Length: 341
Image (cartoon, rainbow, N blue to C red; front, side):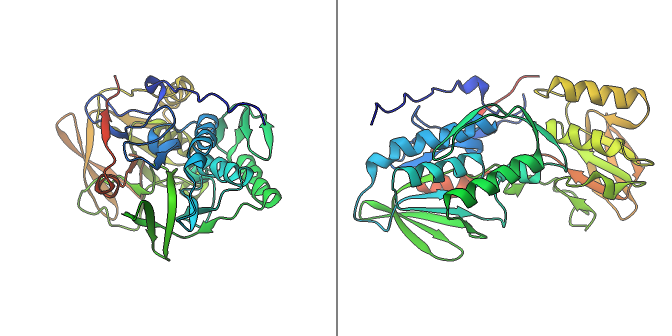
């Protein structure tokens, strides 16, 4: 067996960050992806890294570190929470190192955030090294093809995933951790938190938001054909949703964003948005906030002036809320990161 691979020290500047005014909480981790709580590791989107290749690499490297902590006093060597690229890669590495592992996924599907991308969305990734599989060469790949690849990997390797099992708390007992879920409790030497940031959508907290016409991700733009749709948010997911909707015949699309400009979005999304604006396929309301949602309209404050827009559906793409209180209760420390406009 050769020497262990050197950990890649990811630049914090390359990680996800919030807006200039509203920061995003990022857990503090070492270059080996261990938190300030010894034995608890974080990899992937939860730690601020949403890129498929880098998230998968973090999952692999985290297992390479924590496998040295495995002990006989617990049921498992590691409990992995989350089944996106980081969690899947970690699970494969756990098999490679003969670790006793438990891989939890709160939803009924694997792929993490990728699963919730709009239909046929093209995602950018790069060659990635996976335990048991080797180097996988990707470039631009559609969501469906990437998910099919992950499903095939699970079948080939026998990776065991416990779907629809949600972590609810973590305790420390007699030098080990106990992970409590909605279906049971598991003692483990180490914990790898690899869940995404979209588990709990960030809400608008306005009257009418409980309406059935309000959703928090776009799956199929075609289902909104011919409708008046409001998209709320200023990140890539919001721009991509608005652009995809505007390409449907007869769809009236409005994009509302609370800030004066879009920050940290992909140039191709910015360009496509501007093109759709020029052709009149969608309108953009910067410096705007939703005031209320009614059955057939929405109230919006735009530059201090209330407006009423005809509306059939609202898609909120404002990111997700981390289980920060749960993690802070364990003792994990966070740092608030701000973006730039």
